[in-house]
Structure formats: C-alpha cells, structure tokens
Image 1 (tube, rainbow, N blue to C red):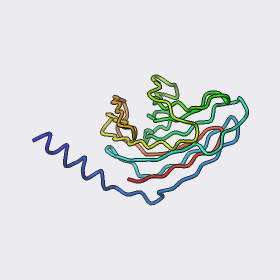
Image 2 (image 1 turned 90 degrees about the vertical axis):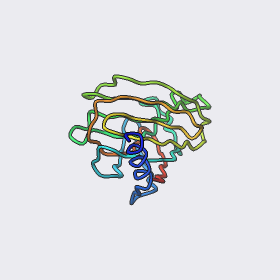
Image 3 (image 1 turned 60 degrees about the vertical axis):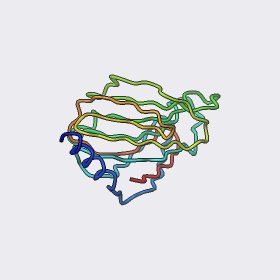
Image 4 (image 1 turned 45 degrees about the vertical axis):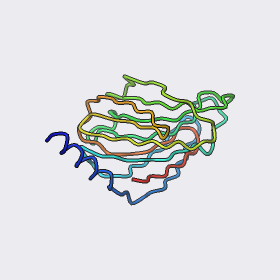
Length: 167
C-alpha cells in the first residue's frame, strides 16, 4: 500500500507546472543572483535544463549555475545541483551537488563532467528531506537532508546562465 501511495504522489507531482518556465540570470564577478520559481512545499519535483551562457573571465569566483531547494524558514540551509567551470582554461564543466547547513557547505560531490557549451537536464525530487537528483544521462544520486519545508530556486555566480523549467 505504501508503494502505491508513493507512486500516486510521484505521478501527481510530475504534473506540477511553473509559471516562469524560462529564467536567465546574470551575476557580476564575485557575486550571485537567484530566483525562486515555486511556492513553499514539503514535496516537489522539478526538471530544469540549465546552461551557462557567459563565463566571467576574472578569478574571483568560478562561474556556476545552481538548481535546488532552500529551507523556507532559513535560506542558509539548502541542497543544490550545480554546474561549474572551475578554471577558465577548462574545456568542461563539473556537475555535482552540495548541501548547505547554517551557511556552511557540509557535503559536496562532483558526479559528472559536461562539455562547456552543453545544456544539462536534471530532475530533482524532494520529499521531506529526501532528495533524488537524476541527470539526463540517467545517473541518479540519492541524498538525505535536514530540510523539511522548502522553496525551489535557481541561481548563478560570476556569469550568466539559462534555466528552462519544464515541470
């Protein structure tokens, strides 16, 4: 019975739509910009195609695009998928995740590499602290967080990124 309820919940979340399907964010060197694209929730599923479209040539912060959820009560707690070019000479971007608690990065891991100009599709399912990150290539990462009620968002650091939210 629990499996059936989980399946029904998952399918119902699959049809959630967002009012702003395409978002483009820009941040100057050493800064970031963000945009919330949904309401506070304890369960959500979102698919985003993201692409870094402008890399900052300075060395203040690497250019990165982020997609994830932050705690509805405290933005200093969050979980994100990230796409980042660590060095200007790199011809690839690193994809991974990070978990932030009380403003400090407590977990991070690189999980794939993509060509610099390739768009990356990722789906994140959030269910009361449990997070599933699924890359378009089929790779899946499962995480446990302390997050309970969250808000979905996208952000960029030191550059310009495109986010196409499809569900």
